Amino acid sequence: MCERTINSDLDLKEGLRYLSENDSQLSRAIEHKSKISLTKRNTGFSALLKTIVSQQLSTAAASKIWQRIIENNLQDKANILLVKDDVLLSMGLSRQKCSYVRALVLEDLDYQSLNSISTELVINRLVRIKGIGKWTAQIYCMFSLARGNIFPTGDLALQEAIRILFQLEKRPTEKEVEAQAQNWTPWKTVAALVLWDFYRRERNRKGVIW
Image (cartoon, rainbow, N blue to C red; front, side, top):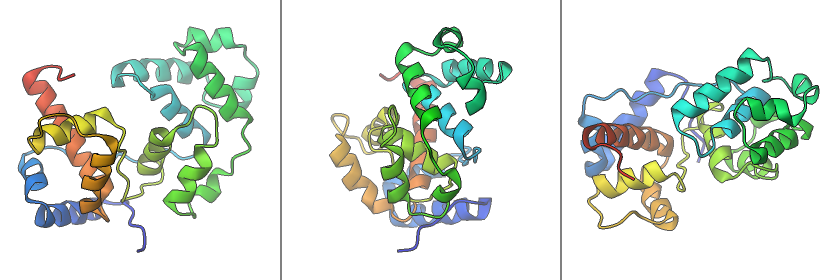
């Protein structure tokens, strides 16, 4: 099957229409007047660096750290090589993330080539880098490469959204989420966007859920 990409509102609408027609439960989340969108990020080193910064942090916390990095012009490989870890720590990075940043800087990665290979190969290449797990690689594929058929099964917000929407007794395991997500091929990415938006609305309505 040819991989779909989400490069326009038309692509997104096609995915939403497909999901609405093929999953009656998921369509309940789509029917709400919500703002479902895919904001495409930059590609290359800075985009992957930003994703590493965001790991296991709230959006607000990650944004603050990234803003400091930008203000100090440390989104560039060469500039990171010029500073010591103390500078990176002062930006808000943990020592562990400092080591991840260093590993990414030293990695000889052909970012341009990632655009032309399959999602599976992109993920396999990225997870070889210290500090980049499957979730980080998937997020890069979704938001930087605009790949249309990715579902981060380890994402807690997505797991919780599925539990609520499908009225499950407990949060599904990654294996169970993976099986569920197969129903949303070839638009798994759109399904993830729908569920993230659904979870955001539920959280705002009920307060923090986990």
